[in-house]
Length: 108
Figure 1 (cartoon, rainbow, N blue to C red):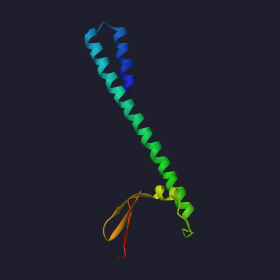
Figure 2: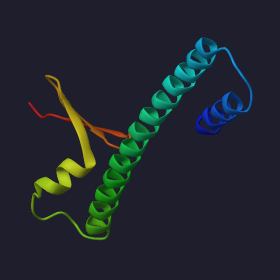
Figure 3: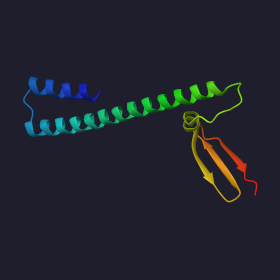
Figure 4: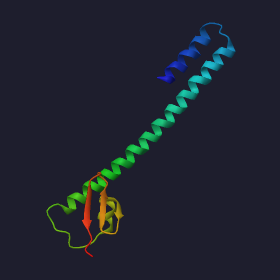
């Protein structure tokens, strides 16, 4: 949309005599807004790609675990499912990437 506004400003400047300082100021403002919007879009595209990859990893891991008891420790499964763990004196709380939490009491 900003690129259309920039093109319209350039076309108007070609059709009739405009105050060049005002035209340059308007162009600079539109260009700055356009560049910020483009940078935000690039950032969002990177976030989407990262979230898509994370979703694929979690889905693959869950599919691997479905219907089978876990008989071996696999670091890839652990890192795909668990965001972090909180260890206290009497328990460990696992926080999954989905936001769910599981508390395991420690026997002591």
